Image (cartoon, rainbow, N blue to C red; front, top):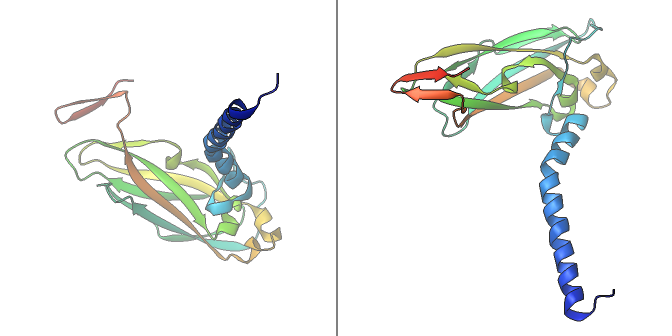
Length: 190
């Protein structure tokens, strides 16, 4: 069966619309995968364990914290900077405080600068992997454990980085379904 005239134009238009919709749908996961593989945009790597190799060379890691415009929490790093050996596991803490009279859920996005060092900054455990819920007046300390992959010293661009900045931005999200708010009390069902 051969399409002609109006039917052919309609089929081509429908094909273009479906192709564009498919590309739009796939763009976010493909871009995320690209960033994780290349470290583009300061995206970090994740590991279950620390590095087996620790070099004598050190690197400074700076910690930065910010909030989205409408996020009412207070959020800051406990320590602004630390110097660690490349490959050594570091442990840093961030502090969050909810000064409001209502429970607030938050999620953190992050990046690493310079971007060339992003794929060499490896997170072992991080508060950013999960949403956080703070009750009214609650203050919490949130850890992030990490290391800088020793392969950074072999990278043409990243090997010149003597300081890496780890930045987090917290933004408000809806309370999870397993939280019940009754009056001033917030209760997790599970």
